[in-house]
Length: 324
Image (cartoon, rainbow, N blue to C red; front, side, top):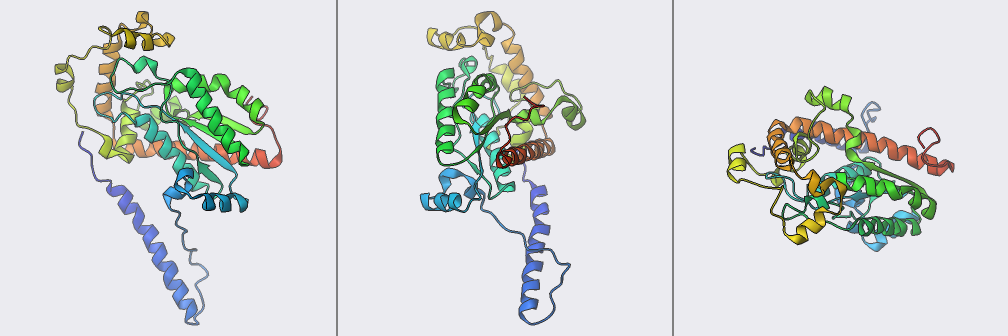
């Protein structure tokens, strides 16, 4: 899997540059006394991508942002540091949701900021692969709540937790009602892959029964956004490594595996086959799939966050009655 230069992104940038040149030319003409071209589009505004990341700002910049009345919502990425087979960096479930959150905030600028992500999540069932780091479920939940509480205390009344790891989904949903009651603000929690329902995936990649981890979807998004984090691999190399994720665990690792029902010893048989299937499916990934998947997630959750902010402004409860 050889990372490729994304020429599509470069070509797409040409009209943007041209629009900027046209805007500058229009301004120069107006300054010289000629009539401005009323049909000419307004020059595009550039927003530094780092500006929407909370910790990239100074306290003065954040203060002025709050005081302007423009800052209305925050996105908190909930992530994980865990194995992603032989070809993807271990921070996959950190960088993908963080990128989606950043792109949403840029689209909705200046109304949205991205809070510091929870880098580690709940992933005890991956601890038989070295490199994975997991939190206890209660630690993970407490971290997210404390970050949300901090944001709320500064006056942010609309909060979206954007999850990037399957093992985090249930622990977040379990405590979401408590968070809403305790904080008294508009809160939602979404896992980004819910922007990709089966019918969407079938239309995009031709099938919907994909593997959920390090397969075609995540690998495609890496090809589109993080090619430098991908490694070449072959199934021959995979098979020659004779990997075993079903036995031979130390007592310490087994203790981690027993923290989640999905990874108790009775469920471990078949894990070697599942792991190889993920590796095999990754070979179907394309940059084009990844671009579409990322764009779809940004579209879906930008719309959702707009609705949440509107509900907050109107003093309406969230979720709406029909979604509760």
